[in-house]
Every structure is written in structure tokens, then in C-alpha cells.
Length: 281
Image 1: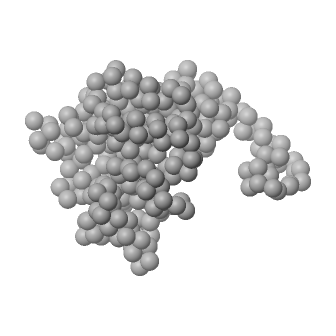
Image 2: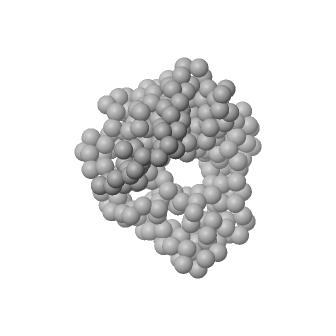
Image 3: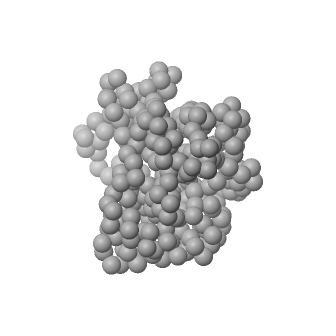
């Protein structure tokens, strides 16, 4: 049943011994995940975001990390989907929001903090309240918080989700559409819900040497310019990529060339050294 569901709808699959092992491993991961938050096994790393034209760091994205005593470092691709399916992403997401905002409170004024948000969190009734609470306790202004959502959030036709997003936007919180270009209806989503930022998926940046891919990147940047939406390129790793993005008018860049994900203390030092001078005073 689980194999058929994971591979699509209206399928059948014959039982194989490996399936039982996979289910047992999945259940063990769920159990470890349930106890990880109260045991304080999670932490946040922060990756800087740079304004391409000025070369100044204008903020950072919070990235969740799980250090399991039994499993070691568990990558987000392995535990986030499980957290979403079990609903654990709601308390985990609230923790990440509070932690990210509390960290950003010590940064130079005006620097933005970006936090990833899943569709499951947005559907939960207390999400907007959790965001407002995180801002209130940290003292970070709403305009400095950026919530990153994926196209799967906007694929959901739920009016409640769109209402929550609009409510948060009216408070001054910025909404960014992550992994832009990887879905099927990116342009339709922009029409349905105007966002403040689109982030070009790293797969496009990695393949920018390809003529067709470069044309797609230029088109996305041009679209952002026309709509008044900030465009950020993810996964920038070489000077050549950065030069191409600069030449085509991309506003922001993020990736190993700009800075690797770092602990809170390290990112604070970097931000103080490379933040816009007008903000550091």
C-alpha cells in the first residue's frame, strides 16, 4: 500500500521483503523525530544573502539542522517530509521561527531573516499567531522577516491558506516563492498571489553554461523586473555565475560563493562586517 501510494495513484504493487524493512525504518525515524525537539537536538544554521550590485550582505536564511545522538547529522531532505506527514512540522516550524527571530534580533538593524514555511504549517490554525508571537518576543520588525514558501503551498486552492498569507503580508512580512521554475504553473501562482520575491532554483544556476538554461534565467530575471519583484539566485558557486547574474540585472545572490551556512555566532560576525554601512551606523 505505502509503495503504491508513494509512486502515484491507482497503482498496485506486489509485496517484497524490502518493503517491510522500509516501513520499519520509517517508523523508527518518526519515533526519533518525536523526541528530538524536547531533547533540543535541533539547531539553525544561517546562510548569507548578498545584494549583487553593492556586494553587501542584506540578510540570511535560516536552515534547520538535526543532530541525532543515534543517527548523527540527518539532512533536511530526510526528515522534513516525515515531519510534514506526521504534523510534527508545526511545533518544529514554530521553534524555528522563534529561534530565527531571536537570533536576528542581535543583527545590525534592517537586515532580513528568511525562514522556510511548509504548506502544513500554513494550514494550521495558529500559524499567523505563531509568526506574530515570534516577532513580538524577539522585537524584530515585521518588515525584516521573510517567509519562504514553495509552489506546493500555492497549489493548494485553500482559501484559508491564501487568507493567512495576505494577512501576514498586510503586517509587512515579506513572502518569497522558493525554488521558482521547478513546478508546472509558476506564472499562474504569481497571478493568484503576488509575492515580494522569487528565488531561482539552484538547478538553473548550476546549468547556466547551457544556452537554453541561461535564456530561462534571463527570462525569470526580466519577469521579476517587470512585476517589481526581487529576484534571488540560489546556489551561486562561481564568479562566472555571479557575473552573468549581475549582467542580467539579478538583484540578490545566495550560495557557497557568497557564504556557507554558518552557526549563529559566525553569521553575526559576518553580518556586522559586511552589512550596509548606513544600517550598522
